[in-house]
Length: 327
Picture (cartoon, rainbow, N blue to C red):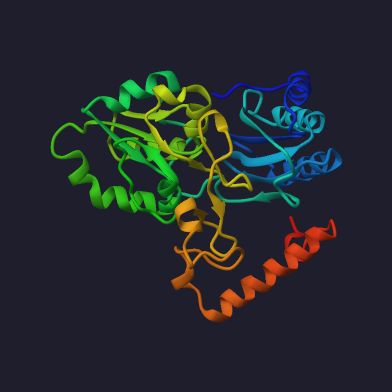
């Protein structure tokens, strides 16, 4: 899994990078029994050290993205690693010039990534991990079927050469898509080799477990996800095309995890490419070409007013009330 960071490493990162904020994306499938007992102390240590973002807790483990100063981040990660089964949790790091989140939330959920398939156990039988350095050879092999397990708007920002886009709107749509398309994808007889990928690896833990439960034996997934690949593989050797959408205010990243060119539509939360930013249907804070026809004039007016209030609050150095509060 991705490299871990202790307190010394966090402080080293801060001194080596002018960006003052560390962003950490993490997940671990591990059985948790007392979710309420874990939630309170976790939320408390995050707030005590100025860490913001969202962490999800479920019977199957923990998932989320958080950000804050390196020293505080190290303290929170020490706390998480002391939780049951989390000593070796994989963490992916990035730097940000400003805090990308408005508040800290720790939520209890049924699943840490929602597939909605009872009986799929990502703690048990999952696919074979493939290191980023070995990924190109696997997906370039004509005998490998490559599937992008992310949502349609994520795929639109970038994907691997030759990957199949399921055109799903949510991860819970993936099982139905696979069952409908199975015969076309796999044919008759022994199923071929299947390689799957996602942003950070968590969705592939479940999607590979799902395919194995469906009788597909040769299932592989990209270790560390797209983010680890972009961090590891130089552009001249890369089979990645475009940018990778991320679920925070960075919006998208490229090779070396450098900031991308997409912006976020604050109406529909989809990434907006530079070409779509030039469209007359893109109005900052109100609409983009993807959602303009999906929203009524009244809804767009509401988004426009919310955006105006956010800008006024930012000019005063405050967080807009719509972004505050809650857990």
